[in-house]
Length: 224
Image (cartoon, rainbow, N blue to C red; front, side, top):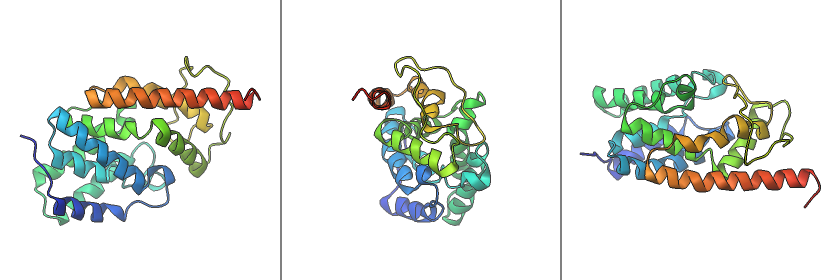
């Protein structure tokens, strides 16, 4: 049976996690809250352990990429979760599940061929990816490019958003531009969802990004 967090437990976890989020505007506290809100819905649908899924969501981006590295930040975030949950009195079994969930749910794990092996990791991955799509995904893509210094800035759209090229994402830092990142990652995400909730939300958010890119391109060409 799916276990739940009490409001008091969730508040203590949020308080412990909050201090690790700050400078990175694409992976700030607003991102965490958005992921937590959706992970609860998907965890319930998948029959996942809500305690593990929600705790993992609060800590999944706790380690800053600039310090921990873009490839290895999930492992560093899992270590932070271990330390904080141990301090909060969680069992070693639950702490291990949280740490494993954080690592398995990361997009970096997906790029290396490792997929979620638990419903908790699947729920976290879907919730995290959903916040990389739609209106917030667009905002976060440009914030990430600016914060980490994408060399081409916003970027030129010279491809069809309905049929984007298969560009390769840079796993060690920012892509050449925010627009490039849509083709290297964001427009590829909708196929990674297995939950009904995730698939439905992903479809709508994917369509929003496509329409945004069409408008972006039209404005660049002076058509509108």
